[in-house]
Length: 326
Image (cartoon, one colour):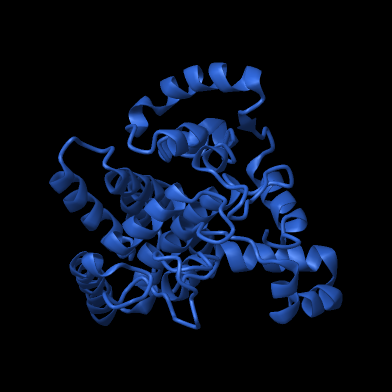
């Protein structure tokens, strides 16, 4: 609210000059960071770690995620699958890497040859951090290669909005319907605000921060499980513990730790989160100290000191496919 108040007080949405344009970019960046904190709280609700009441968790999570145009219950289901099958090449959710043959079939090898290694890394950053989240919600892009019942996808579009989507088992349809209805209500509210106030003011106050929220949530999911040193597994090799331990903690120390604090330490305590997913985030820092002391001597604790920009570039440049699934 502070960032929005300052922006409304100091910046113009019509007849904008250079200062206004730059000011709205700064506002979008910091408001997006703040709203990502809301997103993380809804994420805690989805895990049952916000309060002891499932009803309160789901009510708070539904409101916070819907305002950020996330279909809460659909996300809750697929995110639980991400935790249940972390770094599983067949059933893992989100940032499930392509095989080399899939890269060739999709035309990515041709694109790589045309624009070069660094150009393709830039393309990777764009597809992940700009269009990745809407593509995941609409088509389950980078999601599992099998349905919840281990049947093949067979060309099904596994979106996160339709209760009949093959992504969900039948007993989840009522919840998916509730989440999508709340999503539609918020989308209608944004459309009504656009009709009343115009596109530019709504874009300045809402869509700019919204894009930064998408950036952060995809960045966390991507970087916490992607590194040249962190494997993904096929059916024969994967176990739940092995998958959960293929999680990476990162410092997110930029701006004196502002982002890590604002985002409830979701990136710097992610190993603990994957081992104890319903642990409240306000205990995660303390729990990580003890977990690190236990895992590190056994060489089971993954930590990367790289700054965010360096880590992003390394992942985009070096983590593009797996040779095969097996």
